[in-house]
Image (cartoon, rainbow, N blue to C red; front, side, top):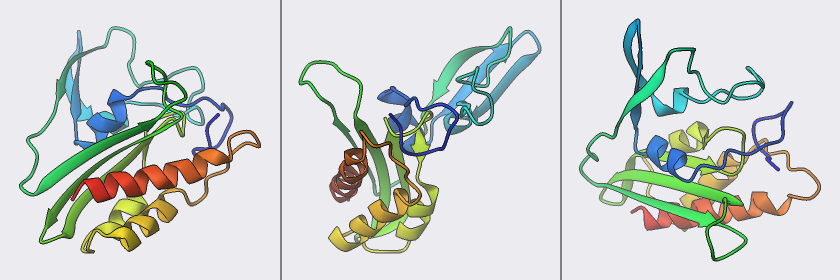
Length: 177
């Protein structure tokens, strides 16, 4: 039951790895008989508004052959937090992956990516832009969480996920500095 990204489908992306890789700036190499191309991982997923029959951009004859994760920039720290129903392996109710590059407690660059909230890993670009140039503290983390969830439209049975996502974003950001 997603709350970001609109219809026509109300699935959520179940991956734990994809949000973390996107936050890290991962790129993927796609190979086909026509050659190779490398793209940012966040461009790999197809939301249902674009094509509800597909989950990714792969065309017939294409295969992912490599995942490239860049070296972290100096002063970078990341954090992944997942809320789930059981202590055993389970899909995320909501997850968040953050990577913050800071200097003297001030954010130089930030990546905030949600899982379990939309049909694709959900990058909160507007929230990332807000944080750049600001000190990462409880107040800025709370504001980032608010911005990241602007426009969230939960269904009647998953309203709680919005508050949970905000809390996870705040925790992850504070742990990332």
